[in-house]
Image (tube, rainbow, N blue to C red; front, side, top):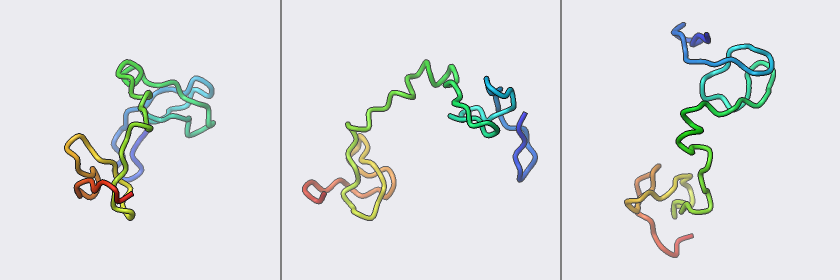
Length: 86
């Protein structure tokens, strides 16, 4: 079990298949040995690792790192998408 370094609460973890140390539940790589961790079953079932980044629309505000959501506004700054501002 991994403990939070700030509040000492037990955090969800899983065992590394290589070194058998604890790693955070959603870790992609082991914190101890660097081995790639297989996806947790919940993520593998939901297809979480199959995001198609080519289908996203970036925020038209050049200073923002957000992506335009299904409502047509940026998920970071909340500004509406401005066509032709790329």
